[in-house]
Amino acid sequence: MLGKAKLLKVYLGESERYKHKPLYQYLVYWLKEKGIGGVTVSRGIEGYGQDKVLRTARLLELSSDLPMILEIVDVAEKIDPLIPEICSMVPKGLVFSTDIQVYKHGKEQ
Image 1 (cartoon, one colour):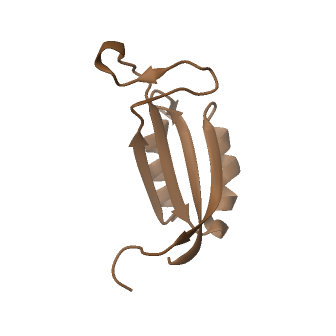
Image 2: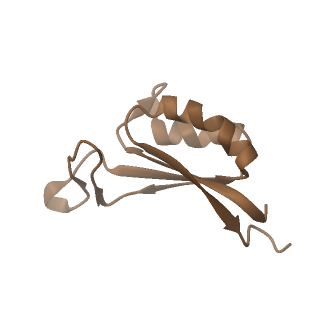
């Protein structure tokens, strides 16, 4: 996949669960089953959301609900149909997308 693509970002809490699994983990496997090109999960070291509750990885203020960020990349035709379902799985958090240009991916073309 080189050229025009879409980046879907999902921000959620580490403690959120879906079908007895961490939500971020469920989404990774679900997206893989859907044939999505790539997904990366990152753990935030500090942040807050709409509730304004600060979550941090600092030792003295250790939070058990750190921010998790999923970055999902593929063509718009594959990502766009999944957005409503993803939004229904993420009860609180942020889901947004933007058009991107992919310059290099995987093996040499």
